[in-house]
Length: 98
Image 1 (spheres, rainbow, N blue to C red):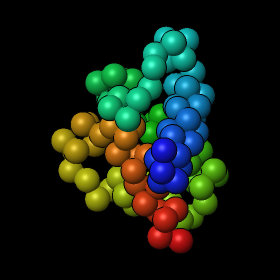
Image 2 (tube, one colour):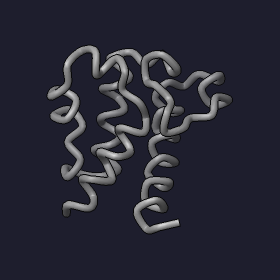
Image 3 (tube, rainbow, N blue to C red):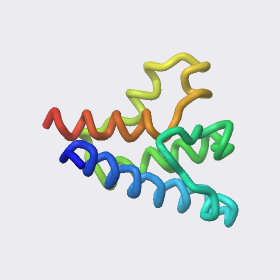
Image 4 (cartoon, rainbow, N blue to C red):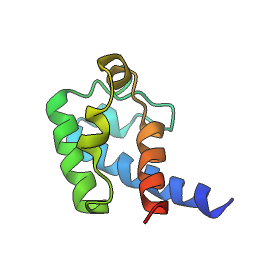
């Protein structure tokens, strides 16, 4: 496994824990969260939960990862189709550009 793949695996684990904490439902803890998992279709994330997730991401990764700005650059259809993998890729890209 390359360093980038290892980094993405770590980010996925971190974000999975954040999602489980933000949603707080038992079924989410029992659902495997992968790179293909959709925030809306699979996890039924609501906008307030995205805000809470954004705060956790900022606390964990700092200002280098500007999740609200990244999200605001998307069309509604893109936000609805957003996957955990897209967020992991974004965080990894922000970390590699530091």
